[in-house]
Length: 260
Image (cartoon, rainbow, N blue to C red; front, side):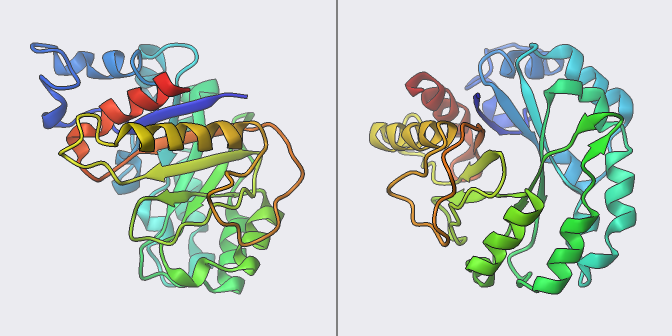
C-alpha cells in the first residue's frame, strides 16, 4: 500500500518563484509539481465540468505512480435533498474522469459547513455513488463539516457503503478519524506563514507518523475514534496540505514525504 502526499491544485501565483523555479513556464507547472509531490487534489472539478481531453493531458504529463484525487461537483452536494443528486453525479463520472486510468484516486464529495446529518437522505446519497466507470473502480470519500456528523451512526453508515470519511486536520471543522473504507484520506489545514515549511518539524513528524499508522492498518493513537477500530488491514493513504498559509503548502507536503 502507498502513502500519497500532495496539495490542492497546481496553479497558484504565490508558488511561482517559491515552489516553482523562477522562469518556469505555466504550462510546465503540473509536470514539475508531479515530480516533487506524489498526488494532487483537483479543486476545479468542484466548480465546473472538465473536458475529457483535460483528464487525458493530466494523465500524460505526470509520472506513472502519480495520483489525482478529484472533488465531486458542488451541484451534487450543495443541495437541500441529496437524494436528488443522481443526475449531477452521473454527469460527473461520465465527463472523462476514466481517462486518468490508474492515476484516478478517490473522489472527494465535499459538503458545506451548514449541511447537517440527515441519516435517511445521506443514505440515499451514498447509494447513488457508482462503483465503476468504464471498467475502472471508483473510490469515494465524503468531507463533512457540521458537528452533527460526529456520531457513531454516520461512521457506521459510511462503513456499510465502503465510503471514506475525510479527516479534517488542524481546522475549525470536526475531526473524524475513523477509517471506513480500504483507504484513508486526510486534509490538513494548519500551515502558518512564520514556519518555513508551514508546519513545525514536530508537526511534520506527527502527520507523517499518522499517515504511516493508517497505511499499516492502525489508527493513530493520538486521534480519537467514534467507533471501535476495525481489524488491522494495510491501506492506501491520501494526505493533502490544504488552505492555511497556502504559499507554504508545497514545502509542507514535501517535508512530510521526506519524513515518510
